[in-house]
Image (cartoon, rainbow, N blue to C red):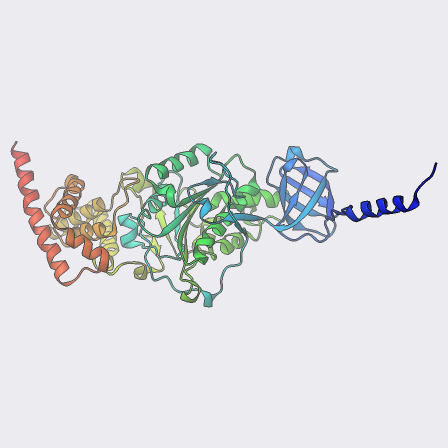
Length: 509
């Protein structure tokens, strides 16, 4: 057989030229232990802390313990899908979440994967879940109010943009209700909202999402949820993931509000992970760095300097107490990190005062700088007046009191009644100013306690119909002085006379 050498050589050359040599080089390790959502892997010498690790059957994990001979990895998926001897691959990436306006209106898990059945999220950018908090020179003080729409909060424990205000109380005292009302109240503002649900029942989260949709609040809200049935690592990273999503808006000169509901469950998830990774336990079996996990999270919320666009991220973390014990480990930690706390009392809640804000120990360390001037003016002495009322009320139970004291007690009861508010009905700040002004200045002294709600709704209807300029002025200027104040006084006197006449006519009938 005659072989043509030249043809063979040219054919081989062509084949060699077109041959694509691609070698997949990746650092891999071997799973030496698996169980309870934790894996130990040997052979990953160059792995980074919080790096994403790929395991078989689509399971991913995060490297937490970096030891000499092995790496402790917490799993985001089902640990039963991984067995000893399996290969673990480095991804070379720190755990990230998608960011951007594409997430608005969606319900996602802490890895940014959709849970609402509305299709994929085509976000073009991502942030690592762990980001360093900005320094002192990159921030500015809290100077701009963030209205919650709740009279008892906006008047006495105001929240400003860039603030961290803790909502704390026993279970079933209305903590989530305050957070949801605050989100609903941002409807006509420029604030984007992120609601992070940690360790809650899926049905509870579905109810919250339903309420937000009903109020039209999902148009500017992202819901991040790690349900009670999800692995502990998912519950642990949820607030960091939510914070990264909020930082996108802040870094682009916009304003965002984030709710962490609640950090007690996140701390419990972290304790579970730490004990499984055999980290030494400290007080209440929490690891020694449990303070740090919350401080590095909450420090990320801030108001940026004007040079950086002046954006803000406001945080409302939620902490659940046991039997009102604010001196427990996790509550004291978070109280010390935040700029004040809104304390909800079980007894107040059960007695029908809702929101059940305990004025005595609730505080905003930002104070009046997070209020409009009109609110600062009308509510300046409100907190002191209510504290005095509580003392007088307790004193009056033991004996007879004079007329002046009775008058003070009556006004105190009226103010308590004014501060009550139904759920999912936040109130515009100008309306809050008007009703508190009416209560503080004695315009409601002659009405009965059970008529306060009717008086309030009738007054708002009257002002909306006849005195729109008063509301508009307060909203636009943020002040209550001069002609506006005089007009309001005249309007209240006019309304009172018509209200009393209507009341008399009703009584006669």
